[in-house]
Length: 269
Image (cartoon, rainbow, N blue to C red):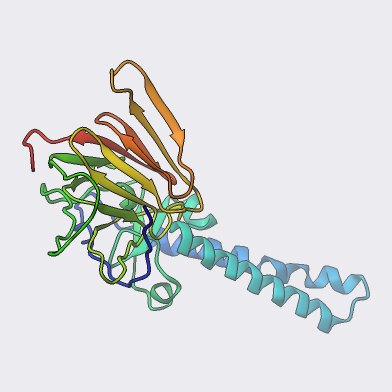
């Protein structure tokens, strides 16, 4: 079985804002001040460089380049993790206003961000949606596949409590997309550390298991599943493109995120 991922469509809905989030307020400004001071520290070495008989122009050039390098490193840190040295020191997380994810450089420049106080509230990356309704993959008509017919009732429980119903073949990843002519359900999984690939894995419901296929990912896919007799837990890393069965009670690891395979109380739910 081969699956190509080339189209540019995203069919996941973001989680609703949660009342558990608390704005950082002045502590966010203080954190950015700490980062600014850290970036400007190289300017303090200009007098020291001058003592080495280095031309003053060269001393300032080296210091400015160091400032720019530290500034770029801080921006990369925020866009990858939502934090920086100052934010970590003061327990502040910066996320996009549109989704609980680290902001893009453009959103950071346009100040389309929210600064969360991790001491007074919960981490925005670990909050499940407020709605009691599980995150349901979008449904398209005309899907055709050679996999066994799904019986329904399969649910993936993310490590933050979010539930994902799997009623038909579903692509999981940081920003999964389908290619023209295919119609998988698409579910985007928030990933703070960017350990999940854009299209990471395919899950397909069957009568007694979920079929899991690795999408040729950078950080790999790992699964543990009870044996058919239920007495032994089998754990393994998947080779790129490998397809294995994961039974109820098993775990799927996509990068740093963990999903537990369960079945809902009502078949077909």
